Image (cartoon, rainbow, N blue to C red):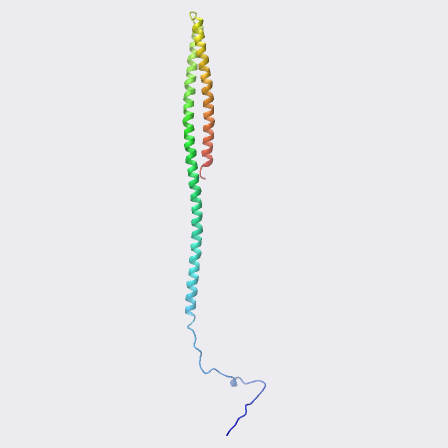
Length: 165
């Protein structure tokens, strides 16, 4: 029987004495699957980022659309109010013109009666009463005209202040 005793050595060991693998380990194919997975994940992240940006852009568009709709509605309301005030102004202007014409006519009639030596005191008194009435009517029409003009200017300012910029 041949018995061998294990040799215990200390110190440096020659490289050739080290254990060498007898078989080559199985290698995974060049990480192709890993590359494909990474490309798919990156593409999905890019799609998610674009979707988030599109959602944010749509939200901004929605806010702006609501703003424009509110402004347009307000502008339409103010324009309608201004148009109504314009109609009142036109009516006041017509009334003022009519009253001024009546005042001129009454003044002319009164002046003619004053100049007429055959005019009676009663005729002159009636003409003076008509002249005073025409003057009061013209003063009232002037006040209504001035009020309508102020309202028209205010309505136009409101419309001008609401214009979309």
